[in-house]
Image 1 (cartoon, rainbow, N blue to C red):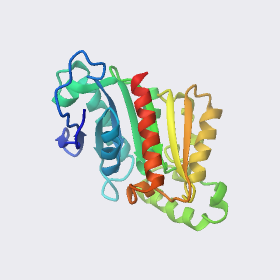
Image 2: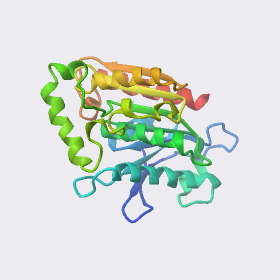
Image 3: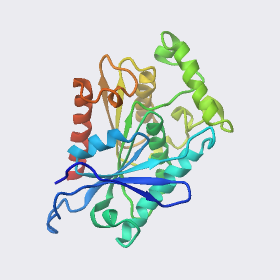
Image 4: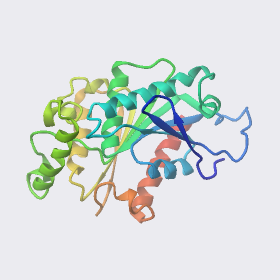
Length: 272
């Protein structure tokens, strides 16, 4: 059904651009159950959603949000929310982008991201749970090596990753100078009173064995299970690998295993 993805920049505000990837080889039959494709809103890295789309029945919208220090947080969150609202505006079939109008199934939407993008994807799902958008149904959130933290160290942050935690914590404080520090609910899900209201029914979290954020990902699973959230969360761990290794080594066995697991997860949801 799909060839190499088409990269189509679409400016829809003064600052923000989304990139929509879809390259059908032929026009689908209008009676086909898959005329309307799963819609992925992917935050942050460009190459990973291209790989993901090539094996999955999805349209991908990648959010190019503004970055610090020129644009401190929460601008990354507000830009991403604006992009989600723009996608949702296509629910009538008569809005700006013809590919979304014709092919995107906005009843089957998922948010995904890696590292800081995974943090934003989580926070967008929290916001969606509190402020659902008419015409858009969020089914799944995929968090790859999520960038979470907190004042109190956990797991390997108490030992071998103690110095690295101090270093990476600085990024949060620099990016969010007006926030509430390391226990800001946007950075530390444990402090979020709205955790149980996360607005999807399924989450896939990927961690890596050597990643300093691994224990934060595992703790996220524990938090979600204790929060009262009624959905299902699945985990996958890549052995002997570090943070977002798949962006730099995407043909390794570990990367292919992760990639195939994500695609299987997506394709299963698209058939439900």
